[in-house]
Length: 211
Image (cartoon, rainbow, N blue to C red; front, side, top):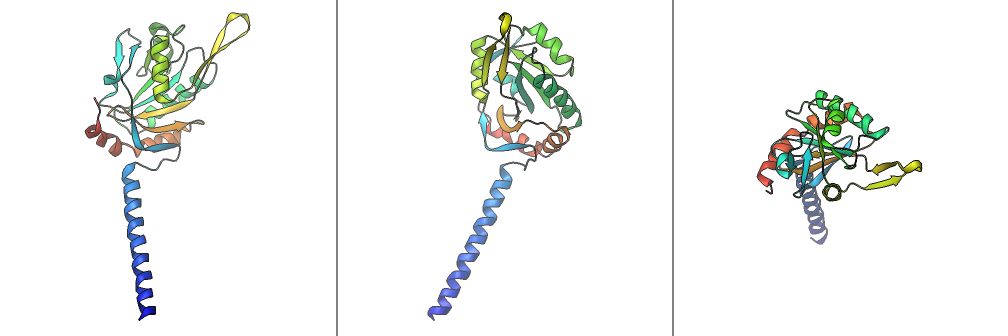
């Protein structure tokens, strides 16, 4: 009896572990798509309130992120390589990804030089649909910190300077939350394929909006 009882206990333990594993996998699967080129956050991160300026000189706040998915990238117009390369790839991704109404926002980390007109001419050269955002140094620092983007001004010989910054693409869901993060190197085909799996998870975020 003792041996039989031990066998039954082992069977029940194995069955319980299998059931627990099934439900855990089910919950993880419900949390977001499996990405090949980025990381889907188990819990979307709410973007806090902010105030920036778009390329037309109009105020742009967190409310402007609500309702449609967006890809956000921080950079500056005098960037010699990373920013133009990334924006070129983002233009290709936006056209290839089967994600309706996908927006691309380029947030400047160099407000001293990136005025709205300068920023507008720059981003629209890559895609007329791209949106550029700038603002005061304090406002940009706050937004960058909220996204976890490191920014550092580096002085150059002759009085010039450049800006070091994190090269990360953020996927924002329709509730103005950071849903996923893509890090370099950015592969157009992989990111586009990942975005094609994202719509069901992005749309379901409306109910969790924090306004």
